[in-house]
Image (tube, rainbow, N blue to C red; front, side, top):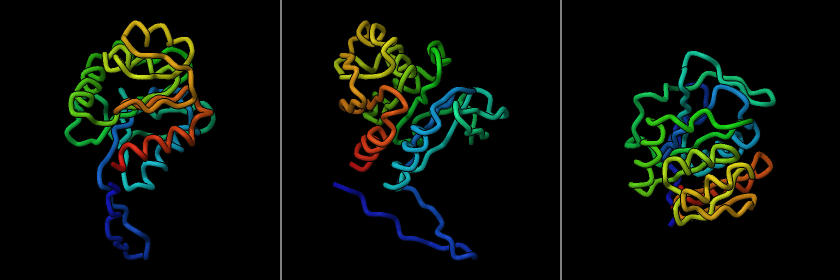
Length: 190
């Protein structure tokens, strides 16, 4: 059942003040993330009135995308808890994810899983979900070189462009942007 959009209020300039039904935690690596797929994911969530809060290990340093995006995140990764969020999205990057050994983040992913919240990743970041132990019994995709790690964690690596399996949504790479965004929106819209 789709939720109704919140009533629109305007600011003093006549612009719509955005109101969100919930927010998703976006965990960004310091550099090399897929700019385009991140844009698709965020805009798909915004279209169903779900905001996002971007976080990184160092909130004072700008994060840099592979193509052109560079910005400061909203908050630090440390100290987050899932009570404020309807889900978590681990942003993929070039090369192995810098979050594979981040116990605080792995705990956040496990907390989201316990509560049945959205858990999403693409590319190399799918391995982080495997490390957190949340892929068991799920169909999962991601970068081909993380397939063995996903299988060892009990997930079924499919290699498809996008997989939505229960509360776990994964994408192979940046080329899956539009389909990945649609899958995210479908999950949080419920």
